[in-house]
Length: 485
Image (cartoon, rainbow, N blue to C red; front, side, top):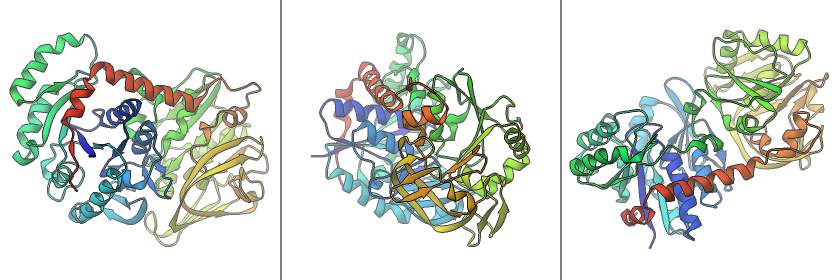
């Protein structure tokens, strides 16, 4: 009989996603069939699934940890912020609407049947479903119509482990306080607390653990020490970009931090590359003059982020960089920005209109409502190296520089290269995970030193071992309950 256990947090960024990923790998290593599930996620870091949709990047990583293909049922509702107060609503992997936060809050309860159907679909093929909540479990002002936390848990009768982050301080108050403010029927579903991200000697928390167990009447799992190699794994959302940088290599790559940056895990292999120094250029800072490559990443709102790029003066920096022989690469939304124009006649990303691009590529883009979602096997034409990637965009790009494509995908081509050979654009996300391509693109003359995908696998195994060491997994599994949908 399939069982389920849900992990909620006392706040955002307490380690829910990483916990579920590590447990997926730990259970799979034990020979158990397990799948991750997140009823509702909010992130512009997404992944393409094998059934032709998109889900949050965290759920794709958790699927990989479980050694399963990512499918849309693992994250049936995905919110992709498009501005300060609204999001694109993706249901079962497909864009359904763009709604204000207020309108979504009013309507979200109507999505519960689809969430439950996805949950049942996953449960039919596994022994355990590990469910991740969203944000804080104590947001009582958002409880009505909830589908992300206790609204789902109550509907499916799934027991809950409540995670607190001791590193940020106040973990005892956050756990006790959460249980005090939520509805009694919600609190009745909580089976244990878990103290995460501990630094120092765990014995120093013994009295705190005793207090929590006495005060709440629930077992306290952990404390789980901070997993130092978390940076080796793709991050869930833009919170991970605080302090994001990497390497002390000779090749300097600068990436302007766009406000609505999307799929920024494209940068992870570059950050891990020994020969690279990666700088995430913060708003108000200039693009470093010693950068050999400026990379414009994906964006959830290309025209709005292009305005922000100009407001920061990064366009002037990029022009100067190009004039002095520097290379420029744009991925997805960054590719569109490098062209001459970006037209949005139907108001896909905001008010209808046309924006002037940077003009470094002789191409033009028209945004269209149909999103292209597919995984790809491609050949980088300048080097002849193969790579895997995925398309996740809503634009159609054409123009003279398309005659010099970046890559070939079957009988079709992708992207564009400028006449001077120093500006590149592509719609392919995930391309830098291919070691030989990455090495060739960065100009290395030797075999690549970094096996990126193998490193991710090692990090997942190390995370599973870390949790096996610091949590009684058998005790945890005993908390799971048979699924009722």
